[in-house]
Amino acid sequence: MPDDPKPSGANAEADASSPSTPGSSGGFVLAATILASAMAFIDGSIVTIALPAIQAEFGAELASLQWVVNGYTLMLGALLLAGGGLGDRVGRRRIFVAGLILFTAASILCAAAPTIELLIAGRVAQGTGAAALVPQSLAIIAATFPREVRGRAIGTWAAASAVTTALGPPLGGFLIDSWSWRAAFWINIPLAAGALWLTLRYIPENRDDAATGPIDWTGTAVAVLSFGALTVGLTWLTEADGNRALALLAMATGGLGLALFVAVELRAANPIMPLAPFRSRTFTGANVVTLFLYGALTGVLFLLPFELIGRRGMSATAVGLTLLPLGLIIGLFSRPAGALADRFGPRLFLAAGSAVVAVACFVLALGLESFWRGAVLPVILLSAGMAVAVSPLTTAVMNSAPDGQSGAASGINNAASRLAGLLAVAVLGALAEHVFRRGAPGGSFAALASAGETAPAAM
Image 1 (cartoon, rainbow, N blue to C red):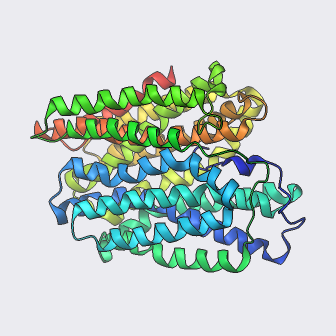
Image 2 (cartoon, rainbow, N blue to C red; image 1 turned 60 degrees about the vertical axis):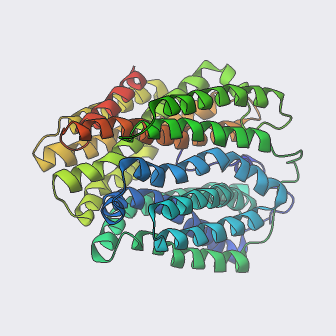
Protein backbone atom coordinates (compact mmCIF):
# COMPACT_ATOMS: atom_id res chain seq x y z
CA MET A 1 0.00 0.00 0.00
CA PRO A 2 1.23 3.53 -0.54
CA ASP A 3 1.66 4.04 3.17
CA ASP A 4 4.34 1.33 3.20
CA PRO A 5 7.25 2.84 1.29
CA LYS A 6 9.12 0.51 -1.01
CA PRO A 7 12.45 2.10 -1.88
CA SER A 8 14.42 0.99 -4.87
CA GLY A 9 16.73 -1.15 -2.81
CA ALA A 10 13.94 -2.97 -1.04
CA ASN A 11 12.80 -4.76 -4.13
CA ALA A 12 16.22 -5.67 -5.35
CA GLU A 13 18.12 -8.84 -4.67
CA ALA A 14 20.07 -8.80 -1.45
CA ASP A 15 23.42 -7.35 -2.38
CA ALA A 16 26.85 -8.63 -1.64
CA SER A 17 26.90 -6.96 1.75
CA SER A 18 23.81 -8.87 2.89
CA PRO A 19 24.34 -11.68 5.37
CA SER A 20 23.30 -15.16 4.31
CA THR A 21 21.18 -15.42 7.44
CA PRO A 22 19.87 -12.77 9.83
CA GLY A 23 21.19 -14.74 12.79
CA SER A 24 20.36 -13.70 16.34
CA SER A 25 20.45 -10.00 15.45
CA GLY A 26 17.58 -10.23 12.97
CA GLY A 27 14.94 -9.50 15.59
CA PHE A 28 16.82 -6.42 16.79
CA VAL A 29 17.17 -5.15 13.21
CA LEU A 30 13.44 -5.59 12.74
CA ALA A 31 12.73 -3.82 16.03
CA ALA A 32 14.89 -0.84 15.01
CA THR A 33 13.11 -0.42 11.68
CA ILE A 34 9.68 -0.79 13.30
CA LEU A 35 10.44 1.83 15.97
CA ALA A 36 11.77 4.30 13.40
CA SER A 37 8.85 3.81 11.02
CA ALA A 38 6.40 4.03 13.92
CA MET A 39 7.63 7.55 14.67
CA ALA A 40 6.79 8.74 11.18
CA PHE A 41 3.45 6.91 10.97
CA ILE A 42 2.27 7.83 14.49
CA ASP A 43 3.35 11.43 14.03
CA GLY A 44 1.14 11.90 11.00
CA SER A 45 -1.96 10.56 12.74
CA ILE A 46 -1.39 12.36 16.05
CA VAL A 47 -0.79 15.84 14.67
CA THR A 48 -4.20 16.20 13.01
CA ILE A 49 -5.91 15.59 16.36
CA ALA A 50 -3.63 18.19 17.97
CA LEU A 51 -4.56 20.93 15.48
CA PRO A 52 -7.52 22.41 17.42
CA ALA A 53 -5.36 22.66 20.57
CA ILE A 54 -2.52 24.22 18.57
CA GLN A 55 -4.97 26.72 17.09
CA ALA A 56 -6.28 27.61 20.55
CA GLU A 57 -2.80 28.18 22.04
CA PHE A 58 -1.35 30.25 19.20
CA GLY A 59 -4.54 31.86 17.93
CA ALA A 60 -3.49 30.58 14.52
CA GLU A 61 -5.48 30.93 11.32
CA LEU A 62 -6.40 27.88 9.28
CA ALA A 63 -3.70 28.76 6.73
CA SER A 64 -1.00 28.31 9.37
CA LEU A 65 -2.51 25.04 10.56
CA GLN A 66 -2.47 23.79 6.98
CA TRP A 67 1.29 24.31 6.96
CA VAL A 68 1.68 22.38 10.21
CA VAL A 69 0.44 19.40 8.19
CA ASN A 70 1.74 20.30 4.75
CA GLY A 71 5.24 21.34 5.79
CA TYR A 72 5.80 17.71 6.80
CA THR A 73 3.95 16.17 3.86
CA LEU A 74 5.68 18.34 1.25
CA MET A 75 9.19 17.36 2.30
CA LEU A 76 8.34 13.70 2.83
CA GLY A 77 6.55 13.32 -0.49
CA ALA A 78 9.07 15.25 -2.57
CA LEU A 79 12.23 13.83 -0.95
CA LEU A 80 11.13 10.22 -0.44
CA LEU A 81 12.60 8.91 -3.70
CA ALA A 82 15.83 10.84 -3.22
CA GLY A 83 16.12 9.43 0.29
CA GLY A 84 15.91 5.88 -1.00
CA GLY A 85 18.51 6.53 -3.70
CA LEU A 86 20.84 8.22 -1.24
CA GLY A 87 20.75 5.20 1.05
CA ASP A 88 21.48 2.84 -1.83
CA ARG A 89 24.59 4.82 -2.75
CA VAL A 90 25.97 6.30 0.49
CA GLY A 91 24.92 3.57 2.89
CA ARG A 92 21.52 2.70 4.30
CA ARG A 93 22.59 2.60 7.94
CA ARG A 94 24.29 5.99 7.63
CA ILE A 95 21.25 7.68 6.07
CA PHE A 96 18.91 5.86 8.47
CA VAL A 97 20.84 7.23 11.47
CA ALA A 98 21.00 10.72 9.94
CA GLY A 99 17.24 10.67 9.41
CA LEU A 100 16.65 9.50 12.98
CA ILE A 101 18.79 12.28 14.43
CA LEU A 102 17.18 14.98 12.27
CA PHE A 103 13.66 13.72 13.01
CA THR A 104 14.41 13.67 16.75
CA ALA A 105 15.91 17.17 16.78
CA ALA A 106 12.94 18.44 14.78
CA SER A 107 10.52 16.78 17.23
CA ILE A 108 12.19 18.64 20.11
CA LEU A 109 11.84 21.90 18.17
CA CYS A 110 8.15 21.21 17.55
CA ALA A 111 7.51 20.28 21.19
CA ALA A 112 9.21 23.42 22.51
CA ALA A 113 8.11 25.83 19.75
CA PRO A 114 7.07 29.20 21.22
CA THR A 115 5.44 30.35 17.96
CA ILE A 116 3.46 28.78 15.14
CA GLU A 117 6.24 29.76 12.70
CA LEU A 118 8.84 27.72 14.60
CA LEU A 119 6.41 24.82 14.83
CA ILE A 120 6.02 24.87 11.04
CA ALA A 121 9.82 25.01 10.64
CA GLY A 122 10.10 21.98 12.90
CA ARG A 123 7.52 20.12 10.83
CA VAL A 124 9.47 20.85 7.64
CA ALA A 125 12.59 19.44 9.29
CA GLN A 126 10.61 16.41 10.50
CA GLY A 127 9.46 15.69 6.96
CA THR A 128 13.03 15.90 5.72
CA GLY A 129 14.19 13.46 8.40
CA ALA A 130 11.32 11.09 7.64
CA ALA A 131 12.23 11.12 3.94
CA ALA A 132 15.71 9.92 4.94
CA LEU A 133 14.73 7.22 7.45
CA VAL A 134 11.46 5.77 6.09
CA PRO A 135 12.80 4.47 2.73
CA GLN A 136 15.71 2.75 4.48
CA SER A 137 13.47 0.57 6.67
CA LEU A 138 12.45 -1.94 3.99
CA ALA A 139 15.83 -1.67 2.30
CA ILE A 140 17.60 -2.65 5.54
CA ILE A 141 15.19 -5.55 6.05
CA ALA A 142 15.78 -6.73 2.46
CA ALA A 143 19.54 -6.56 2.99
CA THR A 144 19.40 -8.37 6.34
CA PHE A 145 17.00 -11.25 5.71
CA PRO A 146 17.56 -13.87 2.97
CA ARG A 147 14.82 -14.42 0.41
CA GLU A 148 13.29 -17.47 2.12
CA VAL A 149 12.41 -15.49 5.27
CA ARG A 150 12.29 -11.97 3.87
CA GLY A 151 8.56 -12.03 3.19
CA ARG A 152 7.83 -12.97 6.78
CA ALA A 153 10.06 -10.17 8.06
CA ILE A 154 8.43 -7.59 5.79
CA GLY A 155 5.00 -8.87 6.84
CA THR A 156 5.94 -8.40 10.50
CA TRP A 157 7.12 -4.86 9.75
CA ALA A 158 3.92 -4.06 7.83
CA ALA A 159 1.67 -5.49 10.56
CA ALA A 160 3.51 -3.57 13.28
CA SER A 161 3.28 -0.39 11.19
CA ALA A 162 -0.47 -0.87 10.78
CA VAL A 163 -0.93 -1.37 14.54
CA THR A 164 1.14 1.67 15.49
CA THR A 165 -0.70 3.80 12.92
CA ALA A 166 -4.04 2.63 14.33
CA LEU A 167 -2.98 3.41 17.90
CA GLY A 168 -1.73 6.88 16.97
CA PRO A 169 -5.07 8.75 17.22
CA PRO A 170 -6.19 7.41 20.63
CA LEU A 171 -2.67 7.73 22.03
CA GLY A 172 -2.44 11.28 20.73
CA GLY A 173 -5.84 12.19 22.11
CA PHE A 174 -4.92 10.85 25.54
CA LEU A 175 -1.61 12.74 25.59
CA ILE A 176 -3.25 15.99 24.48
CA ASP A 177 -6.04 15.79 27.08
CA SER A 178 -3.73 14.64 29.89
CA TRP A 179 -0.83 17.00 29.24
CA SER A 180 -0.63 19.16 26.13
CA TRP A 181 -0.46 18.98 22.35
CA ARG A 182 3.31 19.26 22.84
CA ALA A 183 3.33 15.72 24.26
CA ALA A 184 2.43 14.51 20.75
CA PHE A 185 5.98 15.47 19.75
CA TRP A 186 7.77 14.54 22.98
CA ILE A 187 6.57 10.94 22.53
CA ASN A 188 8.99 10.63 19.61
CA ILE A 189 12.05 10.98 21.85
CA PRO A 190 11.96 7.57 23.60
CA LEU A 191 11.06 5.86 20.31
CA ALA A 192 14.00 7.53 18.58
CA ALA A 193 16.38 6.67 21.42
CA GLY A 194 15.43 3.00 21.23
CA ALA A 195 15.71 2.90 17.45
CA LEU A 196 19.07 4.68 17.47
CA TRP A 197 20.57 2.35 20.10
CA LEU A 198 19.41 -0.76 18.24
CA THR A 199 20.67 0.60 14.92
CA LEU A 200 24.14 1.47 16.16
CA ARG A 201 24.49 -1.87 17.94
CA TYR A 202 22.92 -4.36 15.54
CA ILE A 203 22.60 -2.98 12.00
CA PRO A 204 25.74 -3.22 9.84
CA GLU A 205 26.37 -0.76 7.04
CA ASN A 206 25.14 -1.90 3.63
CA ARG A 207 24.51 -0.36 0.25
CA ASP A 208 23.41 -1.40 -3.23
CA ASP A 209 26.51 -1.90 -5.38
CA ALA A 210 24.30 -1.81 -8.49
CA ALA A 211 23.14 1.73 -7.69
CA THR A 212 25.40 3.95 -9.76
CA GLY A 213 25.28 7.43 -11.19
CA PRO A 214 24.39 10.72 -9.54
CA ILE A 215 21.13 11.33 -7.70
CA ASP A 216 18.71 13.58 -9.57
CA TRP A 217 18.99 16.55 -7.22
CA THR A 218 17.81 18.95 -9.94
CA GLY A 219 14.55 17.05 -10.36
CA THR A 220 14.15 16.81 -6.60
CA ALA A 221 14.61 20.56 -6.14
CA VAL A 222 12.18 21.38 -8.95
CA ALA A 223 9.59 19.02 -7.43
CA VAL A 224 9.89 20.61 -3.97
CA LEU A 225 9.64 24.16 -5.35
CA SER A 226 6.77 23.34 -7.72
CA PHE A 227 4.55 21.60 -5.19
CA GLY A 228 5.56 24.19 -2.61
CA ALA A 229 4.42 27.02 -4.89
CA LEU A 230 1.11 25.29 -5.59
CA THR A 231 0.54 24.75 -1.88
CA VAL A 232 1.48 28.34 -1.00
CA GLY A 233 -0.94 29.66 -3.61
CA LEU A 234 -3.81 27.50 -2.41
CA THR A 235 -3.07 28.38 1.22
CA TRP A 236 -3.01 32.12 0.51
CA LEU A 237 -6.53 31.79 -0.85
CA THR A 238 -7.70 30.82 2.66
CA GLU A 239 -6.43 34.02 4.28
CA ALA A 240 -9.02 36.71 4.83
CA ASP A 241 -6.58 39.48 3.88
CA GLY A 242 -4.75 37.40 1.28
CA ASN A 243 -3.75 38.86 -2.07
CA ARG A 244 -5.66 36.83 -4.67
CA ALA A 245 -3.37 37.96 -7.47
CA LEU A 246 -0.28 36.71 -5.61
CA ALA A 247 -2.06 33.45 -4.81
CA LEU A 248 -2.88 32.88 -8.47
CA LEU A 249 0.68 33.81 -9.45
CA ALA A 250 2.08 31.25 -7.00
CA MET A 251 -0.25 28.59 -8.36
CA ALA A 252 0.72 29.41 -11.94
CA THR A 253 4.38 29.23 -10.97
CA GLY A 254 3.77 25.81 -9.46
CA GLY A 255 2.06 24.63 -12.63
CA LEU A 256 4.93 25.83 -14.81
CA GLY A 257 7.34 24.20 -12.37
CA LEU A 258 5.62 20.85 -12.83
CA ALA A 259 5.99 21.18 -16.60
CA LEU A 260 9.68 21.96 -16.05
CA PHE A 261 9.92 18.90 -13.79
CA VAL A 262 8.70 16.66 -16.61
CA ALA A 263 11.26 18.20 -18.98
CA VAL A 264 14.06 17.69 -16.43
CA GLU A 265 13.08 14.06 -15.86
CA LEU A 266 13.03 13.34 -19.60
CA ARG A 267 16.66 14.50 -19.85
CA ALA A 268 18.02 13.15 -16.55
CA ALA A 269 20.42 10.21 -16.66
CA ASN A 270 18.99 8.86 -13.38
CA PRO A 271 15.56 10.52 -13.04
CA ILE A 272 14.09 10.68 -9.57
CA MET A 273 10.74 9.81 -11.17
CA PRO A 274 11.18 7.70 -14.33
CA LEU A 275 8.40 8.52 -16.78
CA ALA A 276 8.48 5.21 -18.68
CA PRO A 277 5.91 3.53 -16.38
CA PHE A 278 3.36 6.21 -17.31
CA ARG A 279 3.22 4.77 -20.83
CA SER A 280 0.94 2.16 -19.31
CA ARG A 281 -2.67 3.36 -19.09
CA THR A 282 -3.24 1.03 -16.14
CA PHE A 283 -0.28 2.45 -14.24
CA THR A 284 -1.35 6.03 -14.95
CA GLY A 285 -4.96 5.29 -14.02
CA ALA A 286 -3.95 3.57 -10.78
CA ASN A 287 -1.93 6.60 -9.73
CA VAL A 288 -4.84 8.91 -10.56
CA VAL A 289 -7.04 6.76 -8.31
CA THR A 290 -4.31 7.04 -5.65
CA LEU A 291 -4.52 10.83 -5.85
CA PHE A 292 -8.29 10.83 -5.36
CA LEU A 293 -8.41 8.19 -2.62
CA TYR A 294 -5.56 9.47 -0.50
CA GLY A 295 -6.59 13.06 -1.10
CA ALA A 296 -10.04 12.27 0.27
CA LEU A 297 -8.62 10.33 3.22
CA THR A 298 -6.16 13.05 4.21
CA GLY A 299 -8.73 15.79 3.74
CA VAL A 300 -11.17 14.07 6.09
CA LEU A 301 -8.48 13.40 8.70
CA PHE A 302 -7.48 17.08 8.56
CA LEU A 303 -11.00 18.47 8.93
CA LEU A 304 -12.74 15.91 11.13
CA PRO A 305 -11.04 16.91 14.43
CA PHE A 306 -12.31 20.49 13.95
CA GLU A 307 -15.81 19.12 13.33
CA LEU A 308 -15.79 16.81 16.36
CA ILE A 309 -14.00 19.10 18.82
CA GLY A 310 -15.29 22.47 17.61
CA ARG A 311 -18.88 21.62 16.73
CA ARG A 312 -19.62 18.59 18.89
CA GLY A 313 -17.47 19.58 21.87
CA MET A 314 -15.69 16.23 22.06
CA SER A 315 -12.37 15.70 23.83
CA ALA A 316 -9.20 14.87 21.92
CA THR A 317 -9.25 11.39 23.48
CA ALA A 318 -12.78 10.77 22.19
CA VAL A 319 -11.75 11.96 18.73
CA GLY A 320 -8.80 9.58 18.79
CA LEU A 321 -11.05 6.66 19.73
CA THR A 322 -13.47 7.64 16.96
CA LEU A 323 -10.63 7.32 14.44
CA LEU A 324 -9.33 4.03 15.89
CA PRO A 325 -11.36 1.84 13.46
CA LEU A 326 -9.55 3.43 10.52
CA GLY A 327 -6.19 1.78 11.09
CA LEU A 328 -7.64 -1.44 12.51
CA ILE A 329 -10.04 -2.14 9.64
CA ILE A 330 -7.47 -1.30 6.98
CA GLY A 331 -4.86 -3.44 8.73
CA LEU A 332 -7.19 -6.43 9.16
CA PHE A 333 -8.93 -6.51 5.79
CA SER A 334 -6.40 -5.19 3.28
CA ARG A 335 -4.72 -8.58 2.91
CA PRO A 336 -7.95 -10.56 2.21
CA ALA A 337 -9.00 -7.86 -0.27
CA GLY A 338 -5.64 -8.20 -1.99
CA ALA A 339 -6.05 -11.98 -2.24
CA LEU A 340 -9.49 -11.56 -3.82
CA ALA A 341 -8.09 -8.98 -6.24
CA ASP A 342 -5.41 -11.47 -7.27
CA ARG A 343 -8.17 -13.92 -8.14
CA PHE A 344 -10.74 -11.66 -9.76
CA GLY A 345 -8.69 -8.65 -10.84
CA PRO A 346 -8.28 -5.28 -9.11
CA ARG A 347 -10.69 -3.16 -11.15
CA LEU A 348 -13.92 -4.18 -9.38
CA PHE A 349 -12.36 -3.69 -5.94
CA LEU A 350 -10.93 -0.29 -6.86
CA ALA A 351 -14.32 0.90 -8.07
CA ALA A 352 -16.19 -0.53 -5.07
CA GLY A 353 -13.71 0.80 -2.52
CA SER A 354 -13.67 4.26 -4.08
CA ALA A 355 -17.47 4.35 -4.15
CA VAL A 356 -17.66 3.45 -0.44
CA VAL A 357 -15.12 6.18 0.41
CA ALA A 358 -17.23 8.67 -1.57
CA VAL A 359 -20.35 7.64 0.35
CA ALA A 360 -18.49 8.03 3.65
CA CYS A 361 -17.42 11.56 2.76
CA PHE A 362 -20.95 12.41 1.65
CA VAL A 363 -22.39 11.22 4.98
CA LEU A 364 -19.83 13.37 6.80
CA ALA A 365 -20.88 16.29 4.63
CA LEU A 366 -24.49 16.01 5.77
CA GLY A 367 -23.46 17.17 9.25
CA LEU A 368 -25.93 14.83 10.99
CA GLU A 369 -26.53 15.63 14.66
CA SER A 370 -26.29 12.00 15.71
CA PHE A 371 -22.69 11.16 16.69
CA TRP A 372 -23.08 7.53 15.62
CA ARG A 373 -24.59 8.29 12.22
CA GLY A 374 -22.71 11.54 11.63
CA ALA A 375 -19.22 10.46 12.73
CA VAL A 376 -18.77 6.80 13.67
CA LEU A 377 -20.66 5.35 10.68
CA PRO A 378 -18.79 7.41 8.04
CA VAL A 379 -15.43 6.64 9.68
CA ILE A 380 -16.22 2.92 9.50
CA LEU A 381 -17.35 3.30 5.87
CA LEU A 382 -14.19 5.24 5.06
CA SER A 383 -12.10 2.51 6.67
CA ALA A 384 -13.92 -0.24 4.80
CA GLY A 385 -13.59 1.52 1.46
CA MET A 386 -9.87 2.06 1.91
CA ALA A 387 -9.41 -1.56 3.05
CA VAL A 388 -11.14 -2.82 -0.10
CA ALA A 389 -9.15 -0.55 -2.42
CA VAL A 390 -5.62 -0.27 -1.00
CA SER A 391 -4.17 -3.72 -1.77
CA PRO A 392 -5.79 -3.99 -5.23
CA LEU A 393 -4.44 -0.51 -5.94
CA THR A 394 -0.91 -1.66 -5.12
CA THR A 395 -1.46 -4.79 -7.22
CA ALA A 396 -2.56 -2.70 -10.21
CA VAL A 397 0.49 -0.46 -9.88
CA MET A 398 3.02 -3.27 -9.56
CA ASN A 399 1.47 -5.49 -12.26
CA SER A 400 1.49 -2.65 -14.77
CA ALA A 401 5.10 -1.62 -14.09
CA PRO A 402 7.62 -2.34 -16.87
CA ASP A 403 10.11 -5.13 -16.25
CA GLY A 404 12.95 -4.03 -13.99
CA GLN A 405 11.11 -0.92 -12.76
CA SER A 406 9.01 -2.29 -9.90
CA GLY A 407 11.01 -0.26 -7.37
CA ALA A 408 10.47 2.95 -9.34
CA ALA A 409 6.76 2.17 -9.75
CA SER A 410 6.35 1.59 -6.01
CA GLY A 411 8.22 4.79 -5.22
CA ILE A 412 6.10 6.82 -7.63
CA ASN A 413 2.92 5.47 -6.06
CA ASN A 414 4.20 6.25 -2.57
CA ALA A 415 5.02 9.81 -3.63
CA ALA A 416 1.60 10.16 -5.28
CA SER A 417 -0.17 9.23 -2.03
CA ARG A 418 1.85 11.78 -0.04
CA LEU A 419 1.41 14.58 -2.57
CA ALA A 420 -2.32 13.81 -2.81
CA GLY A 421 -2.58 14.59 0.89
CA LEU A 422 -0.55 17.76 0.42
CA LEU A 423 -2.87 19.15 -2.25
CA ALA A 424 -6.03 17.92 -0.50
CA VAL A 425 -5.22 19.78 2.72
CA ALA A 426 -4.50 22.93 0.71
CA VAL A 427 -7.64 22.73 -1.46
CA LEU A 428 -10.07 21.55 1.22
CA GLY A 429 -8.59 23.98 3.72
CA ALA A 430 -9.42 26.82 1.33
CA LEU A 431 -12.99 25.55 0.96
CA ALA A 432 -13.36 25.06 4.71
CA GLU A 433 -12.15 28.60 5.46
CA HIS A 434 -14.72 29.94 2.98
CA VAL A 435 -17.45 27.95 4.72
CA PHE A 436 -16.33 29.01 8.21
CA ARG A 437 -16.56 32.67 7.20
CA ARG A 438 -20.13 32.11 6.00
CA GLY A 439 -21.05 30.49 9.31
CA ALA A 440 -21.76 26.98 8.05
CA PRO A 441 -21.48 24.16 10.62
CA GLY A 442 -18.11 22.53 11.12
CA GLY A 443 -16.18 21.35 8.12
CA SER A 444 -19.24 19.82 6.47
CA PHE A 445 -18.97 21.54 3.13
CA ALA A 446 -15.30 20.68 2.83
CA ALA A 447 -16.11 17.05 3.54
CA LEU A 448 -18.68 17.22 0.75
CA ALA A 449 -15.95 18.54 -1.52
CA SER A 450 -13.89 15.54 -0.46
CA ALA A 451 -16.72 13.26 -1.54
CA GLY A 452 -16.86 15.10 -4.84
CA GLU A 453 -13.17 14.56 -5.47
CA THR A 454 -13.53 10.83 -4.75
CA ALA A 455 -16.45 10.29 -7.09
CA PRO A 456 -14.35 10.36 -10.29
CA ALA A 457 -12.12 7.66 -8.82
CA ALA A 458 -15.16 5.46 -8.27
CA MET A 459 -16.08 5.94 -11.91
